[in-house]
Amino acid sequence: MSEKSRIPSKFIFYLITVSVFLLILSSLFLLQSSNTSFIPRSVFDLILVNGTSVYFDPHVKKEPIKRPFASSEVSQVDAVKPSKRISESACQVSNSSKKLGSVGRKKMIVCDSNQALLRVFMYELPPEFHFGLLGWKGMENQTWPRRIPPYPGGLNLQHSIEYWLTLDLLSSDIPNVVRPCSVVRVHNSSQADVIFVPFFSSLSYNRHSMLHGKEKVSVNKKLQDKLVQFLMGQDEWKRKGGNDHLIVAHHPNSMLNARRKLGSAMFVLADFGRYPAEIANLEKDIIAPYRHLVRTVPSSKSATFKERPVLVYFRGTIYRKDGGVIRQELYYLLKDEKDVDFNFGSIQGNGVNKASQGMASSKFCLNTAGDTPSSNRLFDAIASHCVPVIISDEIELPFEDVLDYSQFCIFVRGADAVKRGYLLKLLRGINEDKWTKMWERLKEIVHHFEYQYPSQPGDAVDMIWQAVSRKVSSVQFRFHRKKRYDRSRLVV
Image 1: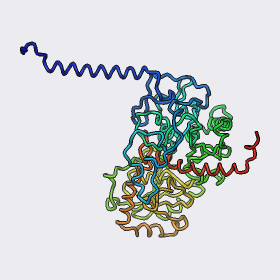
Image 2 (image 1 turned 45 degrees about the horizontal axis):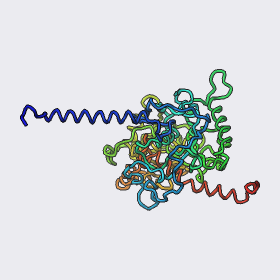
Image 3 (image 1 turned 90 degrees about the horizontal axis):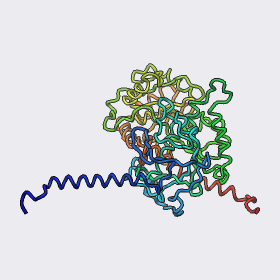
Image 4 (image 1 turned 90 degrees about the vertical axis):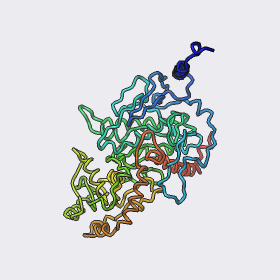
């Protein structure tokens, strides 16, 4: 064959490239036009992670929901799902004596729903209960937004837990989203271990608890009343008296009107400071970390013992009521000490940046009781790798059944802390080696207190679901005991 008749190799390369491109393009078109997707239409089809922004495929049309409050559909995937659960999941938390710093830090794979620790059914409440509170307005019969609005900043953010849990459940329907397999969403409530109520109660309180204009009842109270009425009418609630329902009420004043009526449910709370024991307790409820406000210090940039000139740091509101009066006593004891930074402060202005700088340059950060036993300050300290000094006798801590806080926190009883000289003597007596061990442990466990989307193994979202899974057996236990002498079951 002559040179002139031979086809140039470059031409062949370009021809192959164009053919492959056209093949991929046609495949994508077929996928988008397919009407046989297993993904429920009420959730995301395409996710592009950018902060908390989530995008949907605009070609997906949402079918009208027959029941305005709860979805009665059973997806094809759930209908054929076997009931047998795998007892030792690759995602399950080990109960061994190993440090928890490695919990969840496993290689992430696409979750097999049969191996999930927890199966959760989520009510399809109208947007006024969740993303509508963020200002989102969807089309008629549209439950979930195609682009998730960001959560408001400032102090609102610290109680945003229901936002992250809702996003995580929605994303569990997307097969190409890589996330831990601690929880999967099911669309048949009879297959669920837990029934999740997607009510953004903390945001409802923060934004709508005050009366406006001619209102006689606040929007926040109206929503709680509507929620109670709805839940009491659901077969899912009646089945176990609400014992298997999960309600997030992280702000201490959220759900004030409804908490007694819904007290049989599991609550996700910041602490038990404003709850009677019969409504909230460790037997059934979950303590979740605040979403910290300061930026997490990278481990590689975390200052060492000698690089932190301040011994003790506190910045915040000093005059508090209830158990928080200890703050002002400590202020007068410590304010004139040369290596102590104890000042008034707030989130206003440059407050968060000042707190971030102060904690990152201090060896110990005070976490005292405020109006309630807990505060966001503890989690800001953890994010700053500043050893927390917890002075709050009634505090409950997140994940304490698997985390040993004594490895990275100092606990001081309130009565001892206000003794002149006691606190400084204690902290000055902690040498560099002891402090460094606690500092190293802080860097190991800090990821357990990070809220992320999509969730990551062992982060705050994943840890909350794992904590819920550990409550399920006790919920079943209590439910079964109540049925011992229930004669109504024998009546036909």
